[in-house]
Structure formats: C-alpha cells, structure tokens
Image (cartoon, rainbow, N blue to C red; front, side, top):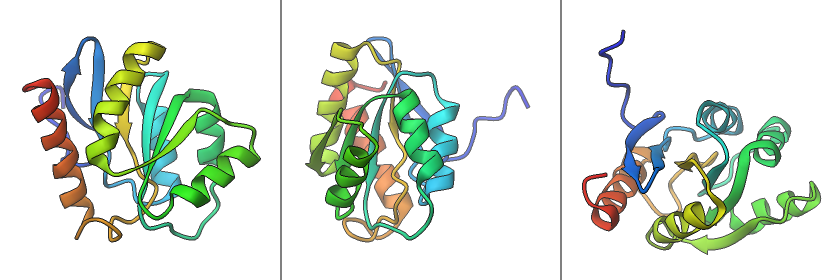
Length: 152
C-alpha cells in the first residue's frame, strides 16, 4: 500500500509549489464526498468549489468549510447559491471567480497570503456546466497548475 499512487481525480496530489500542496478532488461531485475531501487534506485550505449544483444536505460540508477553509473560490453555475449559503452560516471568506482558469492563479495568491497549506479542487457539484465530465474538469485543473507553477 505504501507504493499505491492513488486514483486520478480523487484526492490526487498534483504537486507542491512554494510549500502549498495542490490536490485534485474533481470526483467529489456531491456534498458528502467534498466534505471527506476537505477533511482529508492539511488545513487551512483554499477550496475551489462549484459547477452544476446537486440536491442534498450540505450541513456537514458547510461545517467543514467553516472549520478548515481559509478561503473559498466559487466557480460555475453554483456560485451564487453557494455564496448565499456561505453567507447564511456566517462565513464571509469567499469570492465568485467563475472559471478554473481564474481560480488557479487566485488560489495560489491566496494560499501564500493566508499561509494555507493546501489548494483543493473539491467541487461538490457535477461538472456539466463547463465540462463534459469530472475527469475533464480534473485534467484541466492539473494542466492549469502545471502550466502556472511548472511541474509542481
């Protein structure tokens, strides 16, 4: 097990840049999976979440965000609904950033500024608003990280 490299798109370690670990959890397409993702990485984390919103109970995920996220970057169609939900729980450290192309460089900037240990793509949503699959979304995240930070 010590040699098992993990599974693509499920808590996949992309690499480390300036002490910040980048993690691809694009397969976390619901609240429960996204909560597990957030509680599995080193905190504090910069969380990238959003896409096509799904029904479900987000309470445990919201609790994990309040406890472990230094900041949340919201992408896709779910942005406004997630922003409203975060405001409802009294969490104000978020911004609607629309796309992964904007989220990746912003996440790195915030991670350095806020001394976050991890940047985590764990969307809690389907990908179909901007991508054909969670795999395509995760591949895009990986490619953007490597393009911006070298072979992290």
